[in-house]
Amino acid sequence: MAVFTPVDEADARSLLQRFSLGELRSLRGISSGIENTNYFLSTTTGEYVLTLFERLTHAQLPFYIDLMSHLAEHQVPVPHPQATHDGARITELHGKPSAIVTRLPGQCQMQPGAVHNALVGGTLARMHLAGQDFAVNQPNLLGVEWWAKTAPVVAPHLPADAADMLRDEVAAQVAAAATDAQRALPSGPAHCDLFRDNVLFAGTPDAPELGGFIDFYFAGCDTWLFDVAVCINDWSIDHATGEIRADLADAFLTAYAAERPFTDAERAAWPLMLRAAALRFWMSRLFDFYLPRPAQTLTPHDPTHFERVLRLRRAHTPLVLP
Ligand SMILES: Nc1ncnc2c1ncn2[C@@H]1O[C@H](COP(=O)(O)OP(=O)(O)OP(=O)(O)O)[C@@H](O)[C@H]1O
Ligand SMILES: N[C@@H](CCO)C(=O)O
Image 1 (tube, rainbow, N blue to C red):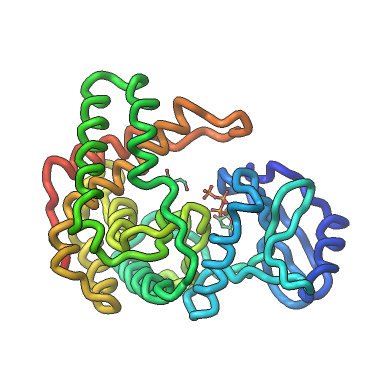
Image 2 (image 1 turned 135 degrees about the horizontal axis):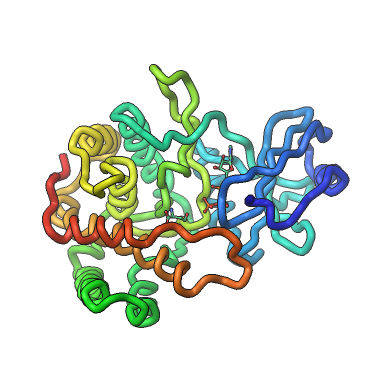
């Protein structure tokens, strides 16, 4: 249950007095999600989501909230943060930073086909291009520096062969990140966590439409190729084995490249980037598994899935970028 901090209708009414979003119609807790408290908030002007941030502090939030505002104002389908009469997009409720964003239409698709892959690929490329002139530069906080720092913390919990692979992969990624070639890859604001549960689809089963991308709270500036690799490792695989499905990956990558063609440098970096994207989630899942935060009440995601994906990507890369 992702209501860690309960909010009642009186709280919502008094919060809404600070906005021009009309009167409260209904308030309903959202059960999914493991990071934040989320409520669907219906008012006389529309449908919104009220989030109370359980992990991020007020000082850490402007990057995410301003990035979503920038993208929404550039017609990328993302939640649009709403401002108070005083122009504040970050407020406070029950001692937690909070925000009200527009509710996007649709549901997640946990068994995506080629059509879903193509919609996400094309929209991701448009998002990358729209983020180019976003002025704030906050790095991906769970990027290569975090991997280097965290490997010695999680490796002692692993069997010897897994610990060896972890150390070897982190060393390869640290070395790659220091090269001029990697530093020159196209980069900018990236979602960094665009899994199947962070994309909504509207339309009909036969003709899905992209509802939007949600949950930007792991976003940061990184190579765009990293964002693509994170997606391919979740959207375009056989989840039982972790193997890439060529039909799904082709649909994703072709749609992405139609909006923003890949460069030769990205083609060269691709095999290692697929490994980086697997390493990132193996490590964060290991960290959550072995070093849970005191407030964490829900079961962490299974780390062994991404250990398997990383092993496969290290063994071979079955696909090339278009
Ligand atoms: N702007 C939005 N529009 C529509 N639905 C939303 C929106 N934001 C959140 N939701 C719904 O709330 C659910 C939980 O949101 P979210 O995934 O952001 O949770 P979280 O706890 O913040 O993050 P995490 O995915 O890391 O656990 C989503 O699966 C989606 O159903
Ligand atoms: N997408 C992450 C969870 C954090 O959003 C994972 O699957 O490990």
